[in-house]
Length: 264
Ligand code: PEP
Ligand code: MN
Image (cartoon, rainbow, N blue to C red; front, side, top):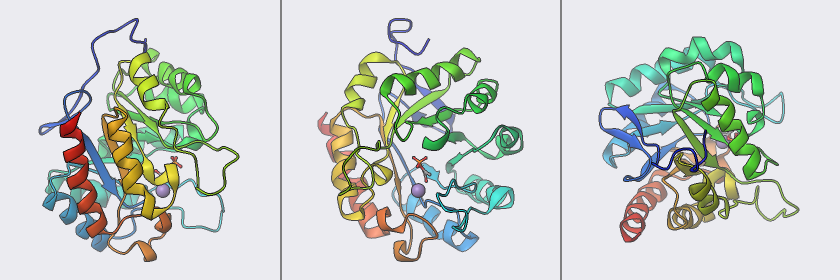
């Protein structure tokens, strides 16, 4: 069902208020790895509004490799995130980690994010097949393109056609970068499926200085959008600070992304 053989016309998702994801527009989503405080959200939302970025990312349930790391503000944080975003006309994308969260999060998200550690959590995919909100599925840490498509097929066949695919880097033998951003996946996915394809250069390379370059490369490769981490003080971020842009870097990237998209 996610194949171009089954549906030729590209899927375009309408999040309301003029926010669309898919062919015909460049989708930009930025924000912190983790939602940390109301003050932080206020600063980041202002940064997004100033740059006409309509979607904010930010986790409230964080999949951390260490159980001692900051694991997110949970539902209370999500409710604040949602309220503040509504007040500013911003849409939110945030990670859902387990089936039981789908229902409680539902009314407070615009896009459910399935993280790389949950790409093959088939029960979660089944549950998301039953909701009427868009779902962005990230490629698994060691997942093939075919496996990503198969995960999308779970949600689609469950009845939810509002899907976005996200290339966020895969684990390879290379250790110079956090992950290996597989930009090969972009043209391949665009050819194989009718779904929008978004690139996450932050997790893809994991090094702040190189994030803008890989973001621009992602757009040139044909991505429908970029999702990246931005924070008012990356050095103090509760998670993923080393791959997070500050506002000056983010602003410059947004300008360049729009220029590059216009050249396509
Ligand atoms: C994130 O978006 O902060 C995240 C945890 O991403 P991933 O699932 O790709 O590691
Ligand atoms: Mn992160």
